[in-house]
Image 1 (cartoon, rainbow, N blue to C red):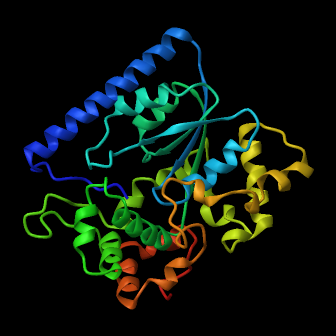
Image 2: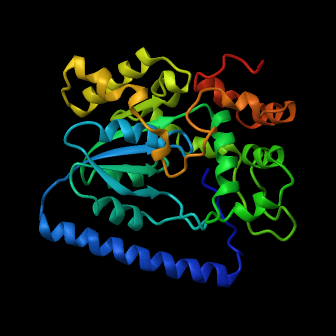
Image 3: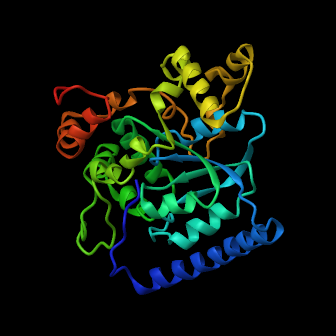
Length: 303
């Protein structure tokens, strides 16, 4: 989830974080210019591992970096900093442009013409992974509660239990709630709509998390390997058939390598059923029930 802070956030908060982000952007600008100088006029090849946040970015990333010829890259390009300030198009351009050729660039970037224009500056192979938004909600609520750097963390920690933390993720946090707060986030349905365009973008291979998780997460290993073959085809990479299962089976992957891994709470299908109370179900149906049907996770609101 990528919430938006109010414009009337305390001046000291905005100033401190704005200065820090400007220093960060200066670093990426220098790396971007260095790439331009060392390879003038060159069009680099990049693999974009994009996702709606908390949808299995690292699962796709592990598969991609197991493909010969592709390079791991440590940074993640996001539309918003953890402090809540939105990143500028210049930041996104400089950060992506600083990645070496053949890098796998992990990102949380909404669908927009500006983002597509930045990608067009390189020879990009685009991937987008998404997930049942009910499982996303559970993962997001856990992550915010755990991650001290995200600006929503203090608000979530003040809530009495996980039920209310989960409800905040589903329904969002309205401006000024609690009284005097400068924090806000859209409901999960509104938020995902900013990413939905990737599902129909012609050059993007969109993949469901549930199709990639394999037996290890309660899915189908055959479906996972079929999707892996699609990934290889999208990249134009050839891997002998007899090597695909050995190299890309779910048992060959380690979910704990993800920087957001939570033991017992990541990598499975339908885990939301353990946490959703009737109140959560009703709230979710109200804000994202039809979207869940559009995404193919339900056939009606009767669940």
